[in-house]
Image (cartoon, rainbow, N blue to C red; front, side):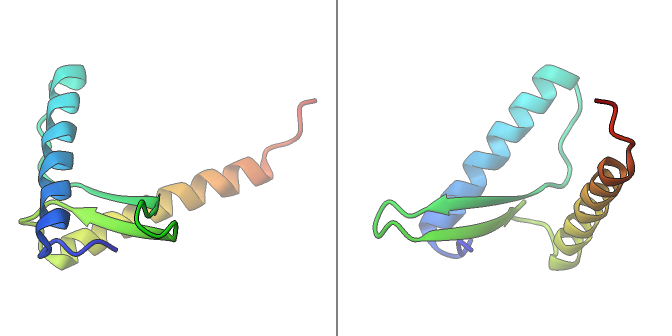
Length: 89
């Protein structure tokens, strides 16, 4: 996980938030109020894989956890639905 207190981590969070806000406003007309994303990266320095959890700078930790739980539940439901769907081929 990148550390948002690290200048590089903080810059990534700011740029991601700006990009998300711009894209969502342009395509949907909505305003981003909270966000969280999980990304897997391969380090440009040593080739190691890692996972970062990034969230809006002002988000309290409990809101980040809440968004992650929500996303996890949605994805688990999709997986369950796909696994129980009859094969149509």
